[in-house]
Length: 115
View 1 (cartoon, helix red, strand yellow):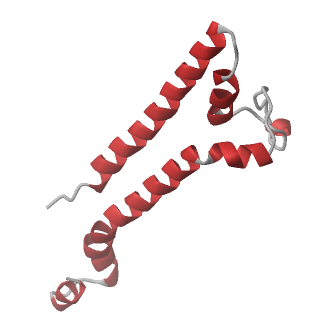
View 2 (view 1 turned 180 degrees about the horizontal axis):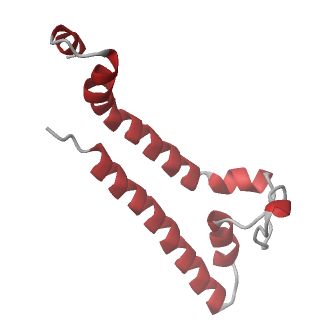
């Protein structure tokens, strides 16, 4: 298709914009989706080694400090004997699943071939 576009007199920028990017976009979106899903699913072991805190980042001075994450919150609260913490663990699980669902839907919509 690139050779055909060059044969028709398209410039390099036109070939990239009209042929190369639309052809490669589904693969790029799939890679981004797999990266986000992997990061969401495997963040608990990573954050166990990177520490965890129940505090949230406040401003730029807190960027280097440990902070809360959904996967660790789910793990910690699921083993608690209190009903409200179990409900928070289920709510955090729902939020994590919805984040992945939104990324899947966006990947499907943006990766759809338009002919």
